[in-house]
Length: 535
Image (cartoon, rainbow, N blue to C red; front, side):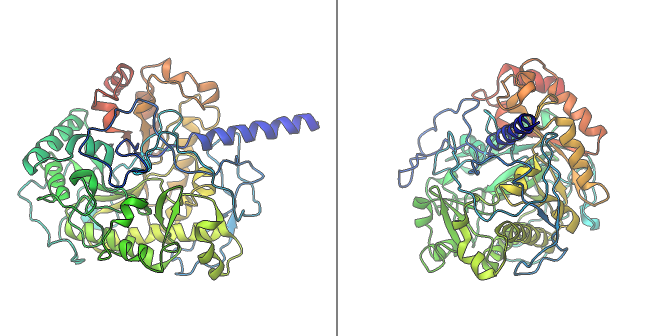
């Protein structure tokens, strides 16, 4: 009997470890090397092979039923200073592990590997080796306001009325249009760089238009496009410096506003445009040190807030959501976008807390008087998400959605993202969980994962879209157990996954990502065949 218990625990630990190790991030860092001051972006980045994508920094210790963090139930209106919150058990999306109540852990060494990442880019793209957590930001369903009711396609054209200049947080009169059934594609900052770096306005519009035409040819009606990946802006901002990934150096603007151009090109093709941001990730020390003190991040980096409001983790700086000023900056960043541009939605992926190490926010945690670091962080993360939701709805009709990992054990225990509380609290319009698992995956079978998410949104206003992994087609699924070769033995995986999602609570799908669908350096014959069958 003791042997049986031992092997059961071992199996659970190995399964959980495989799920954690399988966490991907959503863009891959091929732009710069870690140590160069301002990397030479004028050079063409080295091609990235399928499978060379890095992952988010996660705790190396496997999460088991005995070590899982209990889930606090966040109030609808979280207090500014997180208070003790009643707990409820988390239900894992993995059939072999369920989260039991347990003492919340206050630290766990964050010795995480980010294989294949370039530090300056601190990636976010789907790890094609074992990435189970792609940021699939898909378009969303209508919110409770009449301005976001769904229609067949955006009615706007290139001649649409432009809102007032960025920086004015007034109400944008643009009526966002999102589709009743969503067919979305992610376009990451890497993909923007590969196609749009150094382009004149006319060339930029032409090339981005080609990308959209490719999407439309697949029946795509929504795109989730990176507009802030590293505390930078792909638009004219008074809060964040202009991105180096289009101009060559931090703060150097192009002669035209890229976001304005991209939105106009999308709307002229009846495609909804969702502005994809990473709210906490900032970038390398080299980049942050070059940010002017005219911007909040630059001021904080050069002031007493360094190490508190923004914290370095393995060479990459992140904002700390424990502080009201930080959450206000994140919210104002969304207000600036929604009030100043005719976007149809705001989207975030699974880049929440970057580490489980207690040192990340030890000062704020001590000041809070909270007994549980996990509960403290979960409440902070939820308050940040609500701030983003409020900002989007205050300044226009754009909707707000999130693309967390498919496995909720990882969301809660590693990233401190309580997706159930967000849905219950009513401050997310749609979820696009990264359900990058096959039907035969031993830890997180596709059907079980879809069913769990459908149960989470059931009875709420939150819409559900299934994030699907184009990048896995034809590849070995390393951490899938019995389903290791499943993606190699079929050409209809995506088609069958869409059909199951459609029949079980989903109102659309999102595909990760543009490059795996259309770029010759990424898209394999197997991926193209899968897409043809899906189409």
